[in-house]
Image (cartoon, rainbow over all chains, first blue to last red):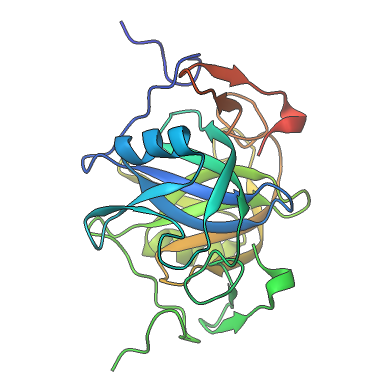
Length: 126
Length: 126
């Protein structure tokens, strides 16, 4: 019945037991990795319909639009899906810093061999 | 006791109920997103010690080294962690295609508004 997900030409997201897929958000201009979040079916549909990235917050148990409080929304440029359709790539244009800490990217620390973290400047992130 | 994870200068991965964090793999040269996988504590340690990316396969319930069967290993250039320390960025040098389909990246399909998927060439991926 099902087409194998890696050769399918139809979008058939494979949600986990919680109804979620992983969403990886990348700046469409620079290619920098900005953040990782989760999407349920409603978040995907709202993102497609409005062109603004929506996610599911596991900690708050709620749907949210990125930027609804911070103003730093993410305008969707393109959505891609991975081979087994359990992860999405959102290529976006960010209105401001993507991280709640005010940094451009959530990935602002390098993990060193001894377990220390080195903080990176905005230009080196993502 | 605990430093808040987003200001910590120590690596304190926040594993989920299954003992996993999300690992996002990016080509250190081109910046292209290659794949997404999961890592447990052992996979992180082995990756740091050997310089070759190791992951935890949820479907097989086993630790694996990327490339152990395909030969297409991923040499670690740098590991970063996100603000809440539940996702890792692995910047790598890939020995070959990262996707099991033989493509450079697992993200080789664009999701269209009507639910169709458009296949992208290797140069447009990631």
